[in-house]
Amino acid sequence: MGMNLPIEGGGEEQLNSTINTTPLVDVMLVMLIIFLITIPVITNTIKVDLPKDWNIPTQTKPENITIAVDKEGHIYWNSAYVGNDDVLFQKIAEVAVMDPQPEIHIRGDLNARYEYIGRVVFLAQRGGIHKIGFITEPQAGTRYAN
Image (cartoon, rainbow, N blue to C red; front, top):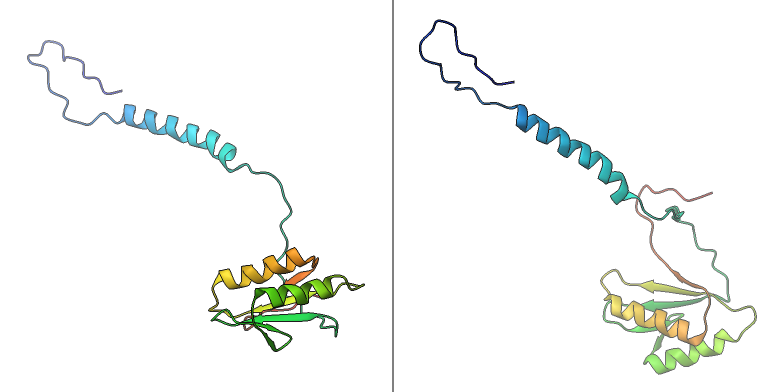
């Protein structure tokens, strides 16, 4: 510990000028134990199986519909310009009743605002489309899933 005993037959007690680190070590060990006990409790989350990140090439079918959104928010239905949201909704509602229902593939510009893409997704959902996909370009050096 950090204790000085007087020397027998001696005069004055010597002062202890060293730092007693025992209480500091005790506090640090207690804190370490607390962290070791609480960290697993904090990081314990609900077990879910997350999807794996694979870029699968699109199987383009003639009945699939591609909706492109440029960076200004202009919408194109299979390369034909769509004037406004009402026209897009009418087109989506027409194809939503087909059997089998076609897939909608959204090609959003990298610099487009999320608002523009979200509006197309909202209209597709409201129109009754069940399958919506996003078209992206793979990064250089990525592999495709088998």
